[in-house]
Length: 107
Image (cartoon, rainbow, N blue to C red; front, side, top):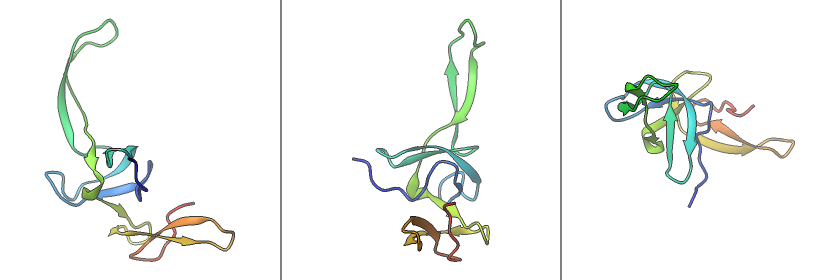
C-alpha cells in the first residue's frame, strides 16, 4: 500500500547513509509502493544490455532506486539536510515546510 511521501519528483535531496553518503542529486522518479526513489547520479549500478537494432549493447551504468529513509530533503534557504513538515496557507492549500528554516518548499 502506498503511503504519503514527503519527497517528490524534482526535489533536491542528499544521501544520509550507504556508499553514496553525502552525495546530492535531484529526484528523477518516486516509487510510492516500494518507498524508494531514483536520484540522479546516486546509487549507480552496472547492467549488461544485449545488443539491439538501435542499441549497441555492452555494460551500461544507471541509477538504481534508493530507500526514502536514506534520503533527506535539502533546505532551499540553508542548503543543508532538513526534515519535512506541513502547514496550511491562508488560501487553504497544504504545503510542505522545511523544519530547519521554516521555508515553504512547494511553489
